[in-house]
Image (cartoon, rainbow over all chains, first blue to last red; front, side):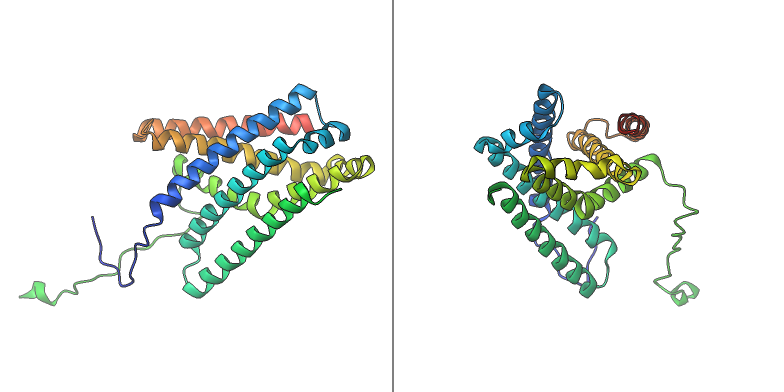
Length: 118
Length: 132
C-alpha cells in the first residue's frame, strides 16, 4: 500500500542503514565472544593481564573496530528512536545533532584510550 | 444525496493510554530493545570508556576503578548495564532470525518473545547473584 505524503520522502538510506545495523551487530557479537573467551582463559581480570592485553596492537585494532561498529550501530538506533518519538522537525534535528556530537566525542575518547599513551 | 453530505475524512479513534494498553509480548520485547539500546548509548559507553581508561593507568588506578563495583549502587548500575547488554544482544539475535524469516509467523514470534523474556529474567537473577 502506498500513501501520498505531504513531505518528500525516500532518501534511500533505509536499506543501507538496515544492513549496517545488522553487520555492525555481528562484528560486536564476534568481539564480545572473543573478549569473554580471553577473560575466561585468564580466569578473571587483574591489572597485569588487562595491561598486557591492551599492549597488543592486534587487540587494540580489534577493540577499535568494535568501537566503530558500536558507534555506527548506536547512530542508526538512536536516529530510528528519534524519528519515531521526536516529531517536530526542529526538536528532532537538534537531538540528532546532539547524538552525533556525543558519538564523535566517544570516538575521540576511544582513540585517546587506545593510543593516548599511559 | 445524503451520502455526499457526510464528511469525507473523519477523525480516526486515537487511544494511546500507555497504562491501559495491553502490549503483546513481541511489543514488550521491542520496546525493551529500544530502552536498553538508548541506555547503553547514554550511560554504558561513557562508563565503559571511563573504566578502561582508568583501569589501564596504573595498578592503583585499576583498584580505584574497581572500587565502585563493590558498593551497592555501583553493583546496581553494573547489573543494569550488563543485563542491558545481554538483553539487547539476545533480542538482536531474535531479530536476525526474524530477518531470515525464521519464526516470523505470529505464534512462533510470540513464543520466541516469551522465551526471550523468561531467559532474560533468569539471566538478571544469575548476574545479580554473581555480583552480590
